[in-house]
Amino acid sequence: MTTVVPTSEEDPALTVVRFTSELAWADAGPEVAEPQVTRLCIEAQEWIVMNKWLELASLMLASADLIFSKVSEKDLECIFTVICNLVTKSESSDEEIEMAKVISGKIIQQPNEKPALRLKILFNLYNLLENPHGQFHVYMKALTLASNGKATEHIVPSFKKMDSFLQQWNIGISDRRELFLTISNVLKEHKSSSKDSFKFLVKYLATFSGEDAYTMSEAKEEAVRAIVEFVKAADMFQCDLLDMPAVGQLEKDAKYALVYQLLKIFLTQRLDAYLEFHAANSTLLKSCGLVHEDCITKMRLMSLVDLASDDSGQIPYAVIRDTLGVNDDEVELWVVKAITFKLIDCKMDQMNQVVIVSRCTERVFGQHQWETLGTRLAAWRGNIANVISTIQANRITEDGSQAMQGLMIR
Image (tube, rainbow, N blue to C red; front, side, top):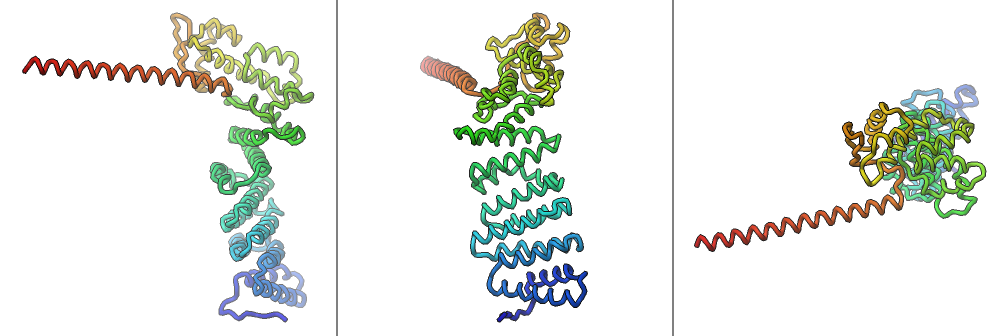
């Protein structure tokens, strides 16, 4: 027998059930609708009395989903605010997560219908949750909804807080992989966010380390994509892809070995190596969507960076001309381009036809670069120590001279 608890005001959840069920059954006529509405309200009351919040949420969602296109966005937001608020009533963490899964799963089912509102509802649900695993699940559903509903502009700003989210969620490797790859794919659709897309793709690849060959093979396609995106990007000249096991596996791969070789050329060799590669593999480059002229432009800048990394600190104009395959009157133009991209800091000595380099960007920053940096820091530390010793010695000499003058005056 149903027990009804008398209250001065109707429970908001019961109000929502009554409102949504009346709309959902409106077309059936009053003779059919009224018994159904009464049945649903009684069932809702039973779940409220028994504190069965998951069952109540499922009941409310069934009617609410049917009226999504029948009421205003303001009413929908109010309805789902009441539904989402049920997660705060649960005393069980498992039930809270399960409710979050049920609610978010229902909301993303029609991504093209009011996607911005659906995302707003998901964000509201996220903020009501205390369990980090539930929060992560809802966030992933929001990513899926934003992508499928073509409303990614509403979720992209949250990517800036990803480091903070990761600390909060404390998720495992497999979840991190799914997250990073999904974000990278979302950003890929935004032409202005290609660098950020590449950054999250690299984060995804970095999660593969020490796994068996089968697990590592999952990353092959994305490793190839990362290489192509790096080569294609006109404003990226440095990356650590060569040091990643997920990328390194391509070196001996029958299908992708040439793609790995292309990356190695861009990060460790010069223009002549690229031209030789292109002559033998022009079809491969076209299939990857790479434009030969763009690759030459980038490779010339990369070659100039390689020349600038020489310890002598000076590059003759003639060497730049021959390495970049340009005319004499184009040498300074390419140096200016490298400066514009902040690849090098230098001065051009036109009288002596040399470029004097004060700083250059490293194409890769691996063990050798760390060792070089350590050597330079040690040298700087030694120079500073010598300067301090000299200053102290001069100070002692001056103090001694002043003391002698004082004795003479007396």
